Image (cartoon, rainbow, N blue to C red; front, side, top):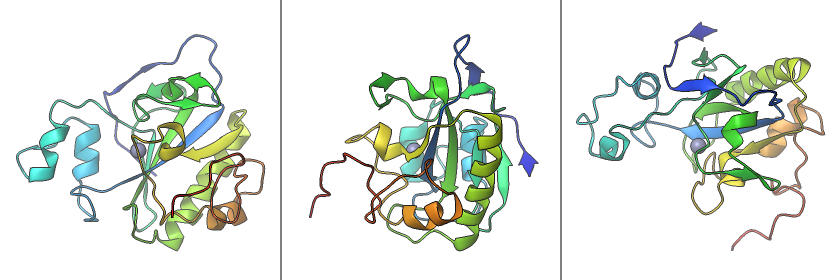
Length: 187
Ligand SMILES: [Zn+2]
């Protein structure tokens, strides 16, 4: 695993347990894979003039604990005990500010492009390791904690595939990838 320190982090609230994993999908420019733009974004080194889609990223200070590249390469940006800035305005089961109590994992991808098998395998290995260290209750998508605002990791993310590699209860979903109690998907 590569480690690249991101300055975009701070301390978790005192006594806060890490109970949630938030899975994201990201690619920069959107839909284009490879390159180091995500690493640059998380280290405040992205030239936001380099692509029109980067304009909205100017002065953004964001990070995640981990990034899983398309080839399964894992990069860590923030220590798990620290608070990374990945979820933004968010809530899980009535608890706001998911960054306080979650670990953020970015998976290089796009909402409607199939993720790579090796990415699921790497993600599952990471979840298994994190589970040994933290009292994790669930792993959910960014779209689950910021519905209406965020769509990642998107409909192409195969929750059932991941669930086969990481046994319940961390990934309790129905066959459509929906969490228990979710409203029916829009058709
Ligand atoms: Zn996200």
